Length: 172
Image (tube, rainbow, N blue to C red):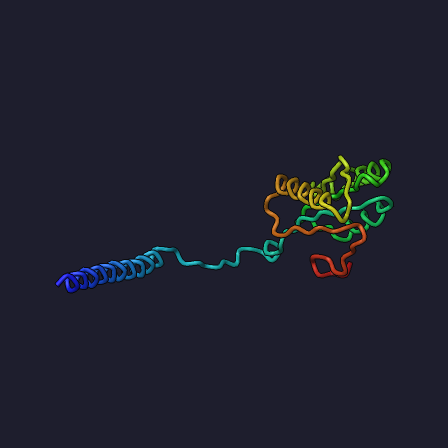
């Protein structure tokens, strides 16, 4: 008789657990149907121009000793008014090169008009095989996120990189 009583408790517990699970499943599906009917439909509008659909890039273009001209050439080839740029010459580059780059960025009419090219004026020591490269990249990301948080992609380039095609699809 003790064994039959134990079996009844087990069957009763299983029945209660099944009912609770069934109730939760039915409630879940009914709520999801209810919520989906309350959600407004997604309607695509054609009010956005083709230019608004272009991605916004945030670039870090960095260089070292002797890279001033190639960094400047890369920046000029990459430039698009929708993007954000930060340039950095590391501590190995002579002070005169860093000063010349800062002067070019400040005095360029296109860059100063749009205001989307920044320079890290305090040069960092960067060893390209160590953690200082990561620290420099994160520093640039922080500056770019603070100044322009609406970028879609971050691209880290060196002065020796050169684009084959511009963002608009024209040859560089």
